[in-house]
Length: 99
Length: 99
Image 1 (cartoon, chains in turn yellow, brown):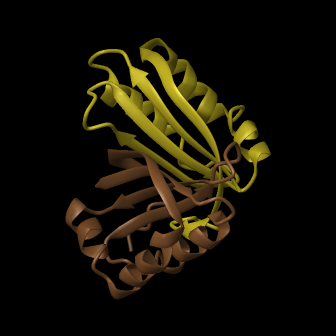
Image 2 (cartoon, one colour):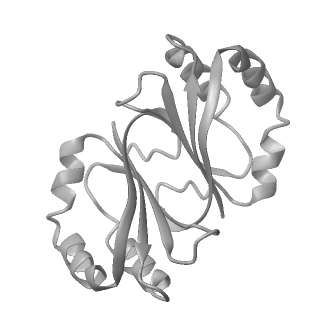
């Protein structure tokens, strides 16, 4: 499996709108086993996204999906930056939707 | 919802055993919506655990569960340390087992 843990930053006051765009496109992505969006309670502009995919190629392919492309276009103007981006190798757990 | 993103470190050569103990106890924890264990491909001793709970109290209560206590006892001797521990506020996504 292929995992990502990322922290991104919305422009001030735009976090909820950005969360909305991210969630909008996260519903049906082939190969996606988990995709969780969270606020950082200690930082009003920060968003954490933790992802698990069956393989890296599925993640790459998702970036070309029309719904994802549309969300990225709407989100880009209100993204202030990306603080951290960790690639992981998930091995198991609970809440991995094996479809 | 209540979320945690943590990076821990196994003693050298003990990562797989530590992953085994963590997974052993992660199966049935009341209020747990997601619990994913992953290797860090860039660091042979590092493990990432990303968790989502319905509320903070459920996470706290899980630490007293016999299976979790047993896993902690077995794991403690092979844990080298905890590198990072982030509390998050999950708002949605995919792969949250609402039970």
